Length: 265
Image (cartoon, rainbow, N blue to C red; front, side, top):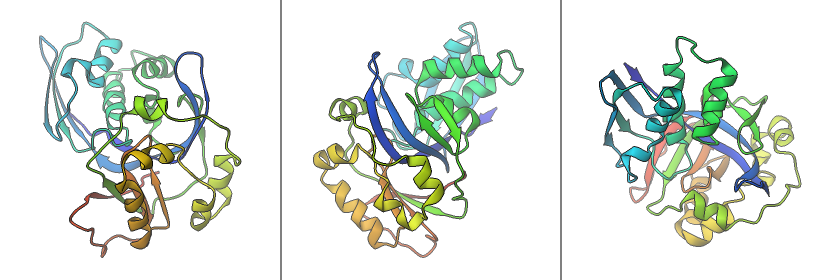
């Protein structure tokens, strides 16, 4: 059995306030994109995880895929192979997507209700509930509160650039000062033209991450120079994406690690 979890991007990311349990209240829009990992799953007498593709640095036992299986049913055992295409530490949600797509697969026989699966996904990670429905959503709370949003970017293309350096999510959150946004992100996304988004929409992590990784500001300007309509850091970074009308004839400087994709909202 093969499973194909996809990545996501954040359009806007406002860090509103701290919660009492060490998390933060956010405001963002998550959009699924056409960039996939591959999970191969076989029933076994012992759960194991092997990987290929992009190297996964953390201990295999701490992988969210393993956590997903244990939370669903600790008695289940699978031989799992993960081929990693979604860059690590990029803000593209690959780990959360892997775990949630596996969770959905395990629940194909509806052992758990939708509410129960939602609660399990929240225990895995704050981004995980989004991948249950896997459609563009306006996101609030810790990432678990979702609303439908009228946004159509299906004809738009993406160029994603992955810098050589990255910053951990923990470090990024430790160095940000929460504050309320002057605009409600959902209203901007639904009522303003894509061309005007750059005048209103921001990712609060850019201030800190740009100060620590000098090339990020250069990458953002580079994508605008290539003709992007909107450019932003995604998540806490360190990937930066540009939204384009067409990328077919755009050639990226070889010094950058880049991915061409599209939004599948």
